[in-house]
Amino acid sequence: MSLEENLRRVQDRHEELSALLSSGNVDPQKFQDMSKEYAELNPVVEAIEALQSTRDDLIGAAEMLADSSDDPDMREMAEAEILDLKKKLPQLEQNVQIMLLPKDEADERSAILEVRAGTGGEEAALFAANLLRMYQRFAEDNGWKFELIDFSETGIGGYKEAVANISGRGVFAKLKFESGVHRVQRVPETESGGRIHTSAATVAVLPEAQDVDIQVRMEDLRIDTYRAQGAGGQHVNTTDSAVRIVHLPSGIVVQCQDGRSQHKNKDKAMSTLRTKLYDHQRQELDRERAASRKGQVGSGDRSERIRTYNYPQGRVTDHRINLTLHKLDRILEGDLDELLEALISEDQARRLADLGG
Image (cartoon, rainbow, N blue to C red; front, side):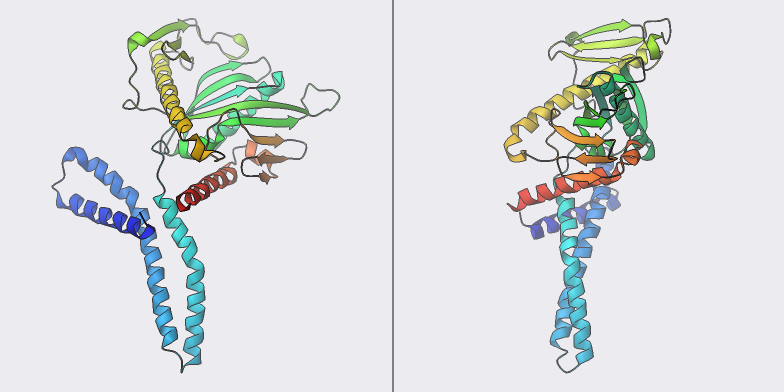
């Protein structure tokens, strides 16, 4: 389907929804879905109208130029307007094309964040804690809810692993390119010789599953309870409130020790399990599309080294898009917007190129 056909299709659907919603004859069960679709199409239609208006202005300016042979001032004005409009058109067309790209159904969802220490021992665990705090601050800046679900601490403030739920609109869309191996280069506090060490942590961002996505049979589960642990190995309480769930068919294990209520911990663990099973399905689909998506920013390969945080030079480098930013301190404080916007833009450019080729 050509771009023009796509534009017409979107406008026709927008007009159809507008008429239906204002008619009062919509099935109440369909009204909410139609209202959501209409709201999502509004900015797309506005972008299309801006594009068409600029095209019309260009035609008008060209006609003015053709009629201005005897008027130098009008000719100069028409030429300047044509030049200005021609500069605007490519960006307007690209804006519309980006809006028309197929949407990832998971983009608007909340997400489960997993951070695990990799190679590097205690230093890797400390770096994992740095990353977890970075995402927590980014979540807070975006008005999202950040909730630590499960963790395994080291004695000096590091995390062997930590799992958090980040709730809010569009969480997965912003964080989905964070999955992969994050590498750090710095002098550990325990290093007396001042030598730079390299260690790593692995990040996984999973779109939160909804009940309609994954149905879990209770007979496929083994549920254990145990006593929650706090910092330094201290008991959070004296009851077996922490919950571990094993999904026997897949071998996936999830656990939650966030709260004092065993019931609430079980609910959170079940939500995490559904998310992991949903992610497994998405990963299978991604592998099927691997040939066409090879090298893309959003490949989702969690064994891939994606970023290096270099403390001595105060820089962060994202290897997928060859972007280096010299603001390490700000990034670790949650200032991720420039990085994430560059990754999203690169993904959109590749997808547009795929459509064109």
